[in-house]
Image (cartoon, rainbow, N blue to C red; front, side):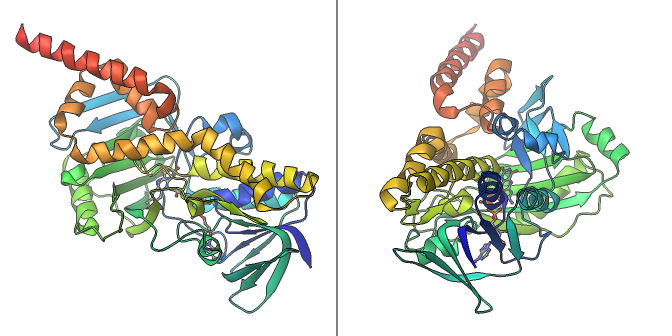
Length: 404
Ligand SMILES: Cc1cc2nc3c(=O)[nH]c(=O)nc-3n(C[C@H](O)[C@H](O)[C@H](O)COP(=O)(O)OP(=O)(O)OC[C@H]3O[C@@H](n4cnc5c(N)ncnc54)[C@H](O)[C@@H]3O)c2cc1C
């Protein structure tokens, strides 16, 4: 059978393309190598701004809990910033359930879903796209969407990923915890914890409390162009982190920690995210924040833009590269500048010392502004001057205070 659209990968990006196009009446097939429900290494934190574009996540009850604030510690543990908001700053999801629910929404709108079939190759001709699975079966479609994550087979096989991909590595563990105990440690506001440059690594450690789960993780920013493996043993860092959290009684001493797992996060968008009859979305296209590792919003937002472009391409009867390039213009306008600026910030972060966090700790306005940017709720690009002005003001103010 020939489909209008075939999507490779059923994470948040793939299912969002599928849902959007099925709603418009297209004949869509969504495929994944894993059997669903499947797990995906993730903190599961969503910026609140995601609901502006994807209100159905709330309406369909896909959100586990909300976080209203938390504490951020400096590397030496000498300084800390407390954030308390009246409105939530993050929504929390359990990826196994969230991703499965998103697939179900697409299926309810008419998408055909095939799981447990790995795409090993694809061919694109003037007339069609062809996907070849590991069991030898094939499907044909007018257009293909690559939503197959950071090591995208689609982008590799079509030449859009050249050479080794630059990635950062994050480790995490998600463990269940009784609701009452969660309230005791994290309050009903589910306040999170962040340790910047934990044990000196370039990155941070996090504790994301959910409804009945606690997600603990660490991420190391590795911007090495040749993607040389970091010499740091991240497994031992996360083990030390869990020990520190228990000893400081930030989490229960008797908490049973689930298996620690890790995965890669892309640092840079692909140079090109389209070609004839093909678009690449989400992690596959390299759309993640290289500073914080946040990628679900970008996955779903790029998917929405890809679906809009595909719809227009069918209406114009033009599935060629020059028409599909509209997609790249859209995402660059929407969040391209933010990703670039986060990359610059991540580079600066590597050379940063504790002075920065010291000033942040002393200023509520600066710490709230930073939290809004880091949680993905406001654009770093649009607020960059406000941030710089506030920081400089704090530096001078603190210097004057010290002098007199
Ligand atoms: C430890 C960690 C913590 C993170 N924490 C957060 C967070 O708190 N908030 C946040 O926003 N982001 C976070 N991220 C990033 C986030 O997980 C990703 O950005 C997001 O999952 C991207 O969605 P996606 O749909 O593009 O790709 P994925 O979710 O990776 O989905 C890709 C799908 O493609 C399938 N696939 C892969 N290859 C093939 C193939 N050859 N054939 C068929 N199917 C294939 C996979 O099975 C998978 O289901 C974290 C990442 C890590 C590693």
